[in-house]
Amino acid sequence: MEHYFERAGAHSYRATRHTTGAWRTSEQHIAPALGLLVHAVECDREERAGDKVIGRLSFDILGTVAVEEVETSVRVIRPGRTIELVEATLAHAGRPAVTLRAWLMQAGETGELAGDHHAPMPSVEQTPVWDMSTVWPGGFIASAEVRRAQDAPGRARAWVRSDVALVDDDDVSPLAHAARLLDIANGIAVRVSPQEVAFPNLDLTAHLFRQPRGEWLGFDTSVSFGPGGTGVTSTVLHDESGAVGTMDQILTVRP
Image (cartoon, rainbow, N blue to C red):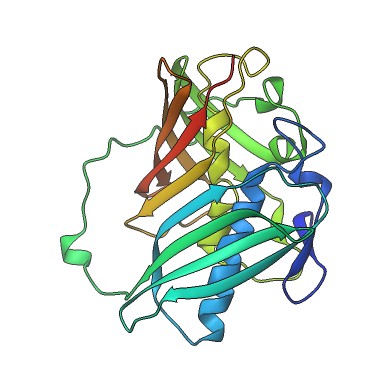
């Protein structure tokens, strides 16, 4: 099976060609790296015999990452019996490139209370196939199967899946499997061509009220640009059973 990362050591991984793009093909698309950090947090949780669920993922992207070997580290910032805050870092050549702060919470049975008011997505079968590589270059975009219905520039609903595994020799949870696709949101509903305007995101924060399941991840996405060089990509995340949470990315807009 193809994969985004090959294990190189206990906490080190080699990026493969499937991680390249999308602003520059000589650099990693940050999406697989975000999934790798979620995997690191979950591995640390299991080593500590924890069973808490992740409710928030807050990534800060500190810089670009070469398509080379990276290292991950995890530390518990706020330990607790029912909630804890964990920080994970992905570094290249000793330089931190991405940080993740994740809130882990005690699981409970709240099925009788479950519900939300997010609009449903059109089904995968109802959503047209879209060749995303017509807009974005790189191995990561090429690895993704995308279906998209675009309502207007900056507004689209899409389903995404990939048959490229996150790590070559690790069992990966459904959450880490989904997290490796999260950062594709900023490229799904572009307001303007990325050949004309750059609008990279500096962060990504997802709040989850349900853990995603299945191969397809749904993005109900809107992109907003302000008049002063900033923007926001806002998404309601779905799996095929319905909404699972919300996500935002702050953009630096550079004509």
